[in-house]
Length: 93
Image (cartoon, rainbow, N blue to C red):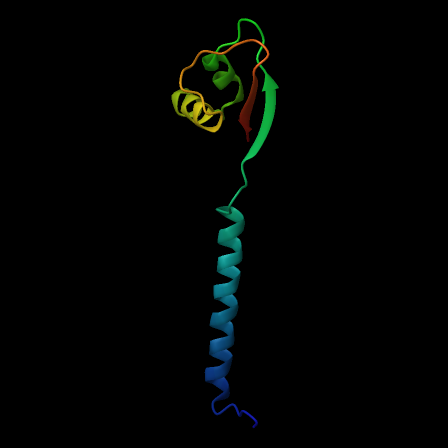
């Protein structure tokens, strides 16, 4: 079975709209694309606090309290108490 193009201008319009849609999606994905979260492990030293670590590793525009909450969540910490030698997973962006 062969398919025939009945209306050439209509088919060309369809192709142009399809190409524009695909291009728009690709550009939007690259601009607002999904970025996988990167992690790094650090070892807590004497005198380190969760607040200081959060201040060091958070993004510039990020709220330190939100980052601290995320650190506690990904490290399964119930309190903000840290002990020297503890290995912490930190978010690196």
